[in-house]
Image 1 (cartoon, rainbow, N blue to C red):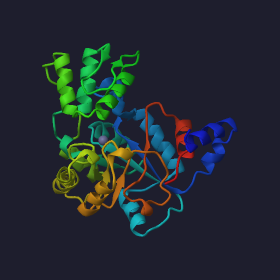
Image 2 (cartoon, rainbow, N blue to C red):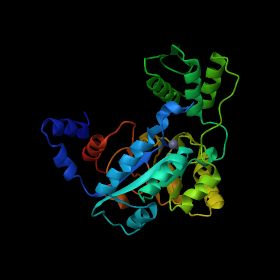
Image 3 (cartoon, helix red, strand yellow):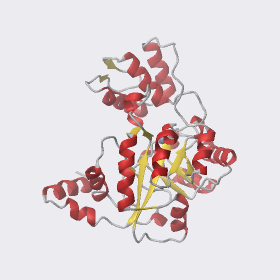
Image 4 (cartoon, protein in one colour):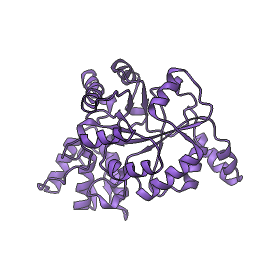
Length: 327
Ligand SMILES: [Zn+2]
């Protein structure tokens, strides 16, 4: 059992939850959201939803009370000055660029007078074509297979009583398969005799991103095609890092120096990717792993973020922040 999980279990048993919460360390805490709304309302992937609008409202109220929310620019100043945080800072981040970031999250951020940063996969902006995970979820929702096995998968998947779990399991199988997502979608389409296409994608357009900036929000890059960077050739990697930055800077007339790794677990970035970020002019980069950044200046390209999931209440948030690793 990992140390933080053991500590959490023991802390609960010994009644130490509030002790660990009150004594959580100084450092940079980051929250990461994807979609805001109800997964049941989309024809696409319900697993990308972090919380409902009502939950976001409550989360932000809680964050305001217990953390000092800072912008990416302020974080970059901390990094440049090699400062070790003397309080509990918080950065609020949103990944991918879904339209509900604008329609649902922005009004709630404004209500709380909080600034957040939005990490954009530029290839998805203004595109009507849904990304691979949304297409696969759409096919599963429409055809509801009782079981599924694609040619590159080691094992088949049998459907359960919970479609959201089935979709999550199928997407995990697709990600870990050696075949491309596009070829697995083609195989699924053939299996289901699907020829009727897909609904329009649910991403922001460039004018939405301009409005976010006008409201004082910040924009970072999340690659162009949302591919896993460690699987790319040197040339493809350079394109993903430089093209997304150049497009955002050109279309939005802003400087882009922050990046979040697509998917974001340990296998999706390495020294070569970090070197590429440095050479392309990025100052900081975020992963998708929980943890407190005790000294962001020491790990500017490996900043940890806490993922937000549906149905988390304040108690769950407190536990998540209390029982975690320091990096
Ligand atoms: Zn993403």
